[in-house]
Image (cartoon, rainbow, N blue to C red; front, side, top):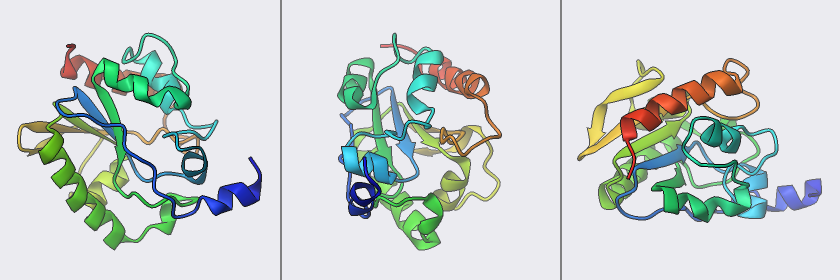
Length: 179
């Protein structure tokens, strides 16, 4: 993919992978340019979402981003706090996060997943106005939907290794149960 093709994807919207009654609805911060250019969530090669999803036992094999629709067969889905694609999340304003949080709460109330898993505790804090939130299950719920803040799987998040991320995702998987 050329830099020009990536730049052309700026501000593009990427459709959610969702259905009603999912076990877990994973929620990214916002689509990156590679995701927007391909139409596949967590598409940047250095992003650890797909390897961690498999390593934690959510999927029986490592899926490619182009196979994202297969998540629905496992009771899993993907959305974002903010729909607008950017090169980096720091291009988003606090207002966009707050509005994204409001829209996300509406979406979750409509779809009623068992768990909403926000991949990025800082995004969760801003979107939900919870400055003290930490990685793990949250006290807040949206109706009957529980919320779990996960580490951001971006390759830029050096504080978490693939192994420690898989461990945290695995804790969520155990809490979410199976269908």
